Image 1: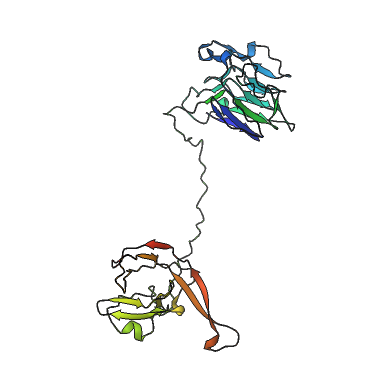
Image 2: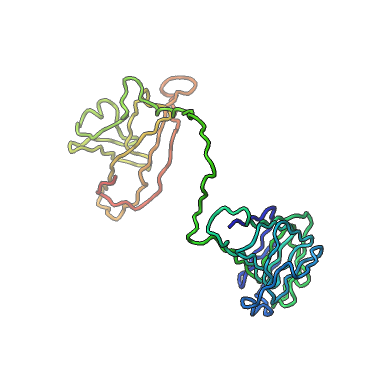
Length: 330
């Protein structure tokens, strides 16, 4: 089934006891008492009702009308479904052109009989036209009398006020794909090669840093690892400790081989860490969650080491959290 609603700028849904208010039109719309037996009412064909389509076409409250017209149907002054309007499963293709649709009763679009899609000869299209505001005047049987004096609904509105929409989809066993009508041989396709991933620079490894701290001297002697703003020690059992920290950003620091970093290449960073107290204050376990900070040293104007400043390439500071102490975390 295919239902198309085109050029629709405004949709106001007010169904049963749920009210969506717009443009200050606050109030309650309810199903009307004159529609109490609507579901059991006999339906009559639309073509037999002699509706004047140059005026507002009203489906009377308490009555049921089945749309049996095919082709193009123009409602010059809109349609107000106060009763029940049914687009049956056996319908033919139909395009309805209208400035608005009001539903105070029930509008039903049944699932098509045949379990195939698409079915161009069954398409139902609502085409909304007009550039002037539309005034909605509620039926006199509306319980609360809202909009009985008229409410401005702007242009091209589809309004459901106390009524309901029953738009039925395809059958459960209907395939939601279409078979190709024909296939043409287009010849060999031109394949565009995918750009290779950036490779490591000459003489460099894909791994920039891989340290287990098994050697208690190498990392410190070569100036690769240290403690930023604090003391650092490599322990014989294979870890680097940073102590005497006085700030949240005091942490282990590693110097990356800048000449081996490949631009635009992804790098994976993994590490293990643990927090330990230097005092007996075991109640304190609130720490800043570990985060990465990439810093590039730059020499400012004037030269000399005294003019080196830090340029933060990445500084995604972590947040405070309760972290179990004296336990290793990945």
